[in-house]
Length: 97
Length: 97
DNA sequence: ATGTGTTTTGACAAAACTGGTCAAAAGTAA
DNA sequence: TTACTTTTGACCAGTTTTGTCAAAACACAT
Image (tube, rainbow over all chains, first blue to last red; front, side, top):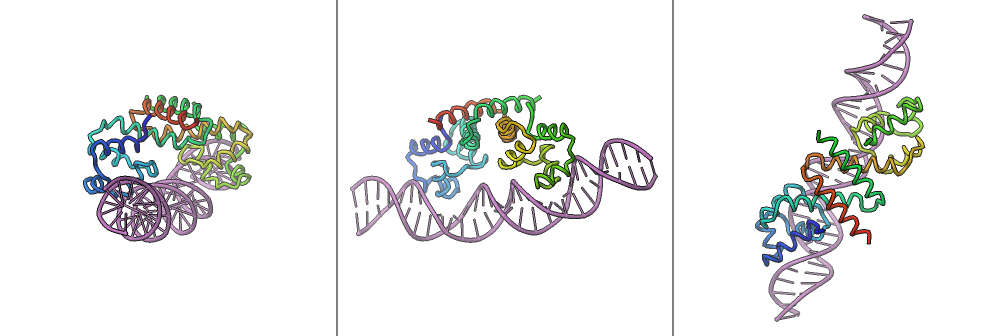
């Protein structure tokens, strides 16, 4: 289960790019990209999509990685995680209709 | 699937209390409690526990309601919700060990 | 309709949190 | 050491969240 950071780091390394280069092309400070890759900071949705486009990654997959990072982070020190996820699932289902 | 607000409103009504009274005893502004009950505002974890104690509700149940409200809210306009929840589950499992 | 009480709403300020910038520190390899 | 990349942390600005308050809306008697 890859996190957003893992995915974009791998993508960058596969293309043999330096942070500096990605930063210049994407117009995002390299410090921030470094933090994204390490999971220190959460990107915005727009940034996620920007990365998907830049690295030509599957948009949906990257969004799922990013959102699930966030959810997992919110629940990280809750031993109620299972129950919460099930309850959330119900609530989302209900909202849809 | 009850939300946090539903639960504490029901608890208050069952005890026949007014917002004013709860607010005074809990030392939380009644406007805020009103908003909690209506789901307009999200309480902090400390407040959730305070409500559990005050109304003598099951702590865990109330936390689950509150956290799942939050998760459902974050994912409300994502049609990837299912995938996200599954991915989050994996990530949490992984973190635990 | 008026009066008495409750609940909801919205404006406001203070505090907390985010997101970005930059430069220095740390790491890597020659 | 030198030359380079990556990571860290301090700082600022802008946004979001939180709490306070009073007025508006609501309910329901009389």
